[in-house]
Length: 543
Image (cartoon, rainbow, N blue to C red; front, side, top):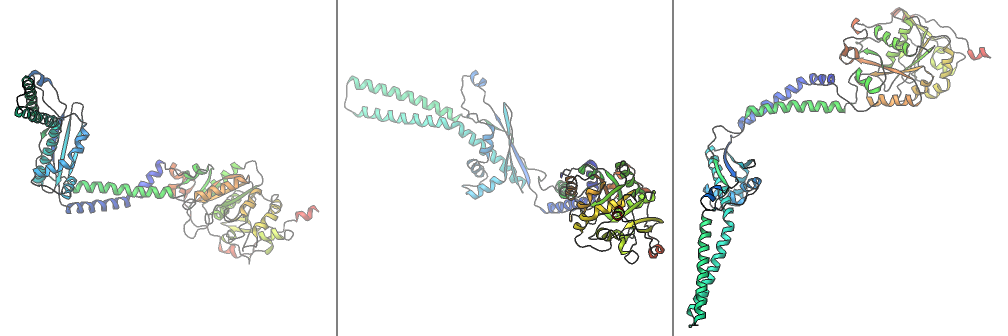
């Protein structure tokens, strides 16, 4: 048996149907609350400027013999970082009229800015979006941010040229100083004149280069251009009450069903008869509906189905000793044992029911037996403690049916030791007189009584209350029975709802459609003295 719980389509459908009303209520409440809260929020507008970043080409420049200086090519993600960098944000605020903004103002402006890239091989789009409650200011801010990014890109193109300009200016100044020194010195002859002419020639070359670099610097361009400037938005970007309400509604449904799934995954109870069948690996021998108030007897059709399955499973065994137990108390084992014994007796099998629950006996009382109307020597305790004095099983009339019972009316001291010492001899004494012996024992997990009786039985039927049974307890019981090599015939499910039964999922039920009502023991029979007869003492006879 596997502890893992799996959901099939039927379980999922039942889950959806079971939680539908609650999920719709929660989702509707979440949607309405979100809608009204969204309506109270201050609207905000988005304005976007689109920039085009393209790679430079030299075709037009080479046609005219002109070389333009452009910014070095960078990855488009660098523009995304640059758009929200401190220098670009400061430049944008300066364009907006915020001179020398402090760090707090720049940080607040950065929170209003978002940058999105659409990259391609040859060119990319950079969308700069500014959010604000004033659509006019948002558009101006987006355009100012674009201007700041364009200024940054152009400055990047001029950086190398500025270094060259500075170097050439330094060299020209050095030549001027050296030429001035030679001109102020006394006449040095032909050599001094030749040196002076060389310096002037070099200075003229550097001055020419300086002018050329300054011209290039003035014409330097970046790789960005404005493709579409920002315009004031006509509708707010948020809040959107209807969209938010729809999302809250969907989220409410999801959360409710997620919680239901979590609860079901943590719930170790069986979901239905098919779950018992697949989880335990043992057949479902019978399913019994929840009894109406006042009824103590199971429907004849259901008990007949259980009896038929047991007959098939134990066809080679005679007499049949059937132990009915459960993992935990209050799972309907006593009702199953009584119903099974009645079904065998109704079909002319010599049947005796043994009330072996010597801790919390219930079968005898349900059958209308009392200590007043029953001989003390006809109880199970007398069979175990005083076999030589034990009388024949007590007969009682149930629904016009004569059923023989070995009753128990009160808890016995040390029942496990008593059963282990003498129960086998009790069965040996009864087997020649009955075709079927049905035993109602205590639950298997709390006490060891059932495990003491089980090895002497033909097979064990485990009663499982479908709404409450814990699969871990059922697994532990089955493991215990298998460990002592007991034959497990199958499961008898009690308190089954029609939708949770094998018959309910397949369109037929084991007689449930015939209806049932409370079956009471006739009052006159309850008060009549019961017939008893003494069984021969086998030990004495053998002697």
